[in-house]
Image 1 (cartoon, rainbow, N blue to C red):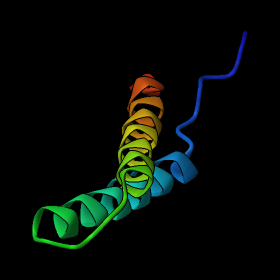
Image 2 (cartoon, rainbow, N blue to C red):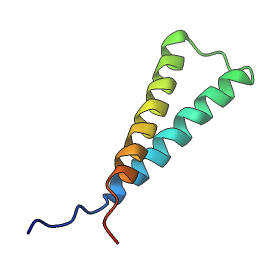
Image 3 (tube, helix red, strand yellow):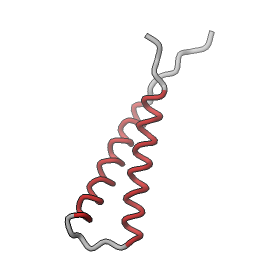
Amino acid sequence: MSAAPRRNYFNLFLGIAFLGYGGYRLFSFFNGAPYTTFRIIIALGFIILGAFDLYKFYKNKPPI
């Protein structure tokens, strides 16, 4: 019998942190901060990584 998959709470923490940081950067850009295109792309990358980490966290639901 194989062990049930456990949730990795590090993925939850990283997902929230990346989404928060990337969202903050985009929010400040839309409010008038002078960012270069590279910084905007990096902020979008953080948001994508955060969403992927949250997906990995919620994908591995342990059985009840």
